[in-house]
Length: 471
Image (cartoon, rainbow, N blue to C red; front, side, top):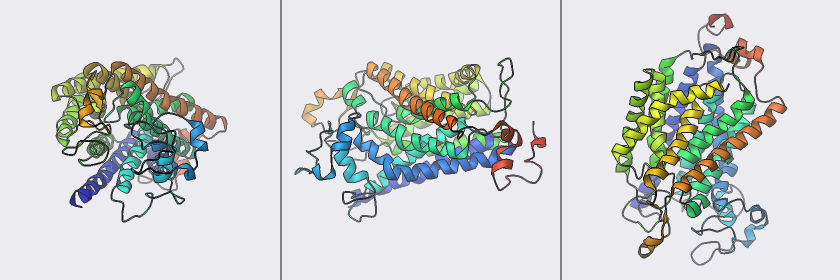
């Protein structure tokens, strides 16, 4: 019982730590907006969090358990709950979508992840259940993080309702599919290709970053961002201090994010009972995180300082440093982490400037920091850790020679899949919203300021919000 309560408390504490990610995004994005748009950016962040959490409860969690082995649409719609009869071990032998772990597929998803019906055993108060709620809570915060990642790129010109729809698609569907395929011990990218992504550089960061890219193509730039000759103007936020502090709070929250990626000793997913594991069942310790998170953040700051001397890019470099090594935080030695994170810090500004040269107005560099660096991290793990054991879940100790290993080709395939899972829905849904007039705020309203036009409150004393008070 002591171990059970400790596990429950461990995951429970990751939730408020991950909430600091959203405190950070709130400060970061509000600081990066102009005075006339501060509250509208804050409202967008609050709604992204709230709607993503609710919809992840209603259907997002179900997708994670239903889809690891791929889109077997026929099985998803033809396997009835009454067909799902657990065997003596509690597994659903009638479920044709079952894979390696024997717990994924529609029957299992129906039994634990629908918040209604007789089969919903774990989506509400249950005194006999010590883990599902807090484990769901940790995943729900992952989902909300994806929406917050994308939101920063879109500030100062996206409609609120349109953004909420996009946040729901990203936070309760797109990233969940990526997680089911590559962040699950039964995911087809893992079992068939040897894909490995411990810290979710792919299914969270890359998916969210490239979802934002798909939206940005249809959303267009802020009024005044580009000149007639295509050259770009710098649009400064109103409060660099709030931006930098917000970025540091995101780093603090990532300690909770990454510790929630560990399966504690004794959980049923692995033969290992004396230490923690990754979500793939491979050995993992908190000691690895203690070394590698702080080293990665530090390396990213150093790399960005070498190249820019700009505090915005330095703190963005800290985030990029962690993302660059996130896939292999459970594997990398500290010296490797330092090198990779410094490289990430060096390349983020040139990559962001290249994207801007294509006419893309990413207000906070989210596509680069999360998308590009997420791809970089996945590919580098394939180069540096190819052949390393990548999947132990449900493998008996005597069968370890047969475990799946990390492969370079698998990391490449995974990177491509994560790009497409993010970009395609981001582009298509935003294109539809654009067609029905629900995507972009009219240019005249942008000039006046979204707070002036849409928000029944003022962020600052009288006069500071007026369009004449800023360029």
